Length: 383
Ligand SMILES: *Cc1c(COP(=O)(O)O)cnc(C)c1O
Image (cartoon, rainbow, N blue to C red; front, side):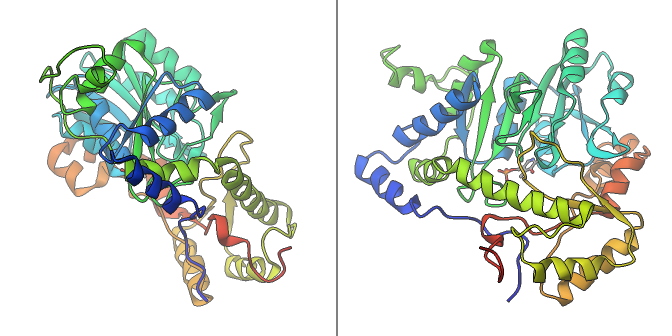
């Protein structure tokens, strides 16, 4: 049996709710299940306004339209991130200015922010890597002083907190993902959070193809029309119904992921064999890492156990570790390649591709993620 890196979890209620959505007779977007999901986030985390989208990528694209990003504007974002964080702004003609990670952490190094800000800077996109919070207090303070928007790429950050505040509720805008690799999933899905009240009305219009259809359906106007640019960003009720089955079980899913995360952490840092992972499995990890110096992520009590990673002192050791695991049918995976060194960056932003961002490159070359999913636990000696 191979232990995959990820296995999307199903709660068992997905088809029941999809049937319900079908029975309701309205399966296009912005219906009953969409409302339930959006209300869930607004009530549980205090997000000002939530709009489900077809992906986090789309939520980021909405954010770029909503912030009126124009050709020539500059957007600062980490090099160590997924392409969508950057693509959304490149599509609007922005110049991406890449910021390095911290020396000891994949998140952006906020102490480097101010030197990258120019009169053309319009927004900062922060990425909460693995659901680990960026230094939001410092970042919001810098943004405010320079009159910049902050977009949280919270794709991996559902149910994570920063100083007691939910991630996704701090920046002007935030984007979540419900892709099947995330803690809560519906195959493909996402959400835009609008925390700045001034942006809500236009966000709804962009969401509904540039029309004021949402206001029409609430009975606020007697006909709807084309009032702005926009696109089709809303998912169907089939997707929202699936997502609802997951959200209902958020606490259960999170509890299990936290147990697994803690079992990994204790094992690698304290040598404890926590019963949440089988001793056979941990034994294989032990053998695979023998003689290869590495360290794990720090424990952050308010993080959401999205991923568990190791950072090797030497890149070649990471490959050796992955190979040894593979020989034992355990799949582990690397993560982002620095975006500033990508082929696109070389073509679009040659000055950026020449910059030296050593920390981002180090995480590209030496970070590896271990299997972490709801059903990882049922191995031999788990109660
Ligand atoms: C997963 C992810 C995305 C993209 O999410 P989709 O829903 O697949 O579009 C964007 N940014 C980060 C940091 C991600 O992890």
